[in-house]
Length: 146
Image 1: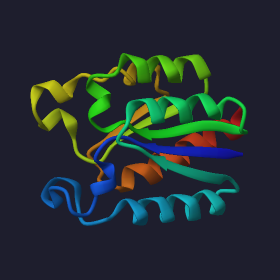
Image 2 (image 1 turned 90 degrees about the vertical axis):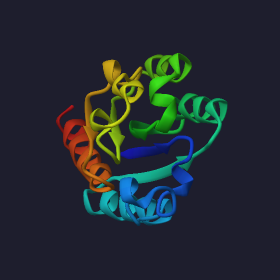
Image 3 (image 1 turned 120 degrees about the horizontal axis):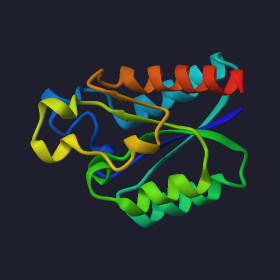
């Protein structure tokens, strides 16, 4: 079982970007733990981050034929703006869990709307980088039941 972790714009700056909001863990830390935890759960994981919407969409499309069974995704700012990203996920039709490091509902009003949530199996926000682990555990359990 292969899970793809996708991170959108600015998440490459985790650990240095507004650490009072996002914490001190880097994206490399998050990806390393994600891959290790997937292995402990009997799955494999691959990670991809881009600051470019088209690159994320291309990677989502590629998942259709590379054995990916589901996504954990933190779309970053594209959460609130990208119909195209939402449509890419919908066209591939694999289960996904949306993750946000911060609690987007305690932040600016524009962050309260997500184009992705309506097609997600679940949404995790505000748990810090622990949200990635919760999403992975949920997704693996769901896929094991299928």
